[in-house]
Length: 404
Ligand code: PMT
Image 1 (cartoon, protein in one colour):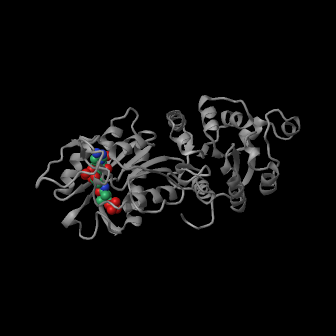
Image 2 (cartoon, helix red, strand yellow):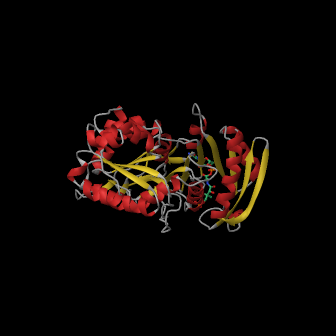
Image 3 (cartoon, protein in one colour):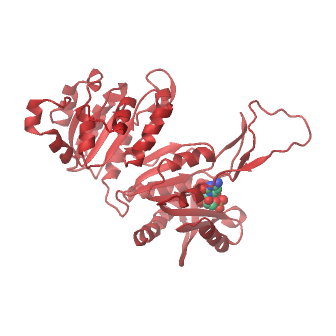
């Protein structure tokens, strides 16, 4: 994550909601960072949250009275809850517990925080934090998908060691990362407020518990696009295959392994612009052995079945996003790229050489070159660092997205 200080928060009005969970204490650090960046912060806590961190702490850090109850005549007299909902330019609920997500999804208004979320027109961000089983529970996942579908922005959760001693997804994203995301949210740029979903890296298709089929993608190209999109103000979801790269500042990252998992993560919110940079395995083993396959015969065969085509699936959605596919080619770059544009019904293709003709570009290198192809035009982006290339690619995407 970038260490730079937030630059876009000056004078911004942020309503921070805190629901009940051990991560509530981290909200104090977030308030401090937001204030340091120049934002005005008002804190609303649920009854459960005050079991974990005191309102007095948040009041001292935010410089404003902290609100908990819906029916508090003294607070209502100063700023009524509807006024507070109107005041906010951004609502961030961190941590957002499983209970809070469920109530938000159900449209309940049974405490001040959920009431404010219903009454506000400001974008709502939730930073989930809970035990990994609770996060993975089908009903929580349905709630999150439903919330995303209604435009709620979900940052995290992160993976790692949990307060309960378990390890897995469910940790609240660290305050420094939430701060960077808030900063990016207010960044001015041609993609300000636009939801962009990007796939990056390879997929792994399991053969048995220790082996898989994959490819040479490092994720560098896709991560560079995600970083450039966030810098242009987009709300970026980066669906990443297994790669060893840090998450760009202001980007929501979802880690997956297989093509099927990648498809599911993408369909949860394909965004308004979808850029498929991942090198998705076209085939997967028909059967995954549950034990390590032992060395025996001189020859063995592996039967493969077709994976879903993520890009084509998104492009065929009703109300599909502006859809950009990549084409990794070892011959006939433009012809094959144009073929993919037409066959998959895309808005644009970014074609690049891979293999011998890549000449220092393509897979796992810092540089690349792209041939952009759309229905009535083309543009060549000559070889340069993937960060620069990503920015130039997005400039063309923005132009064509706006003309769509
Ligand atoms: O990750 P790096 O090391 O930086 O390398 C970058 C890159 C070479 C991987 C990248 O620039 C690139 O070319 N990505 C696309 C790789 C690829 O799978 O190309 P393709 O021509 O096989 O697929 C065409 C398009 O369909 C791609 O957008 C791909 O993401 C998508 N696809 C393919 C198969 C599938 N089952 N689902 C898909 O969505």
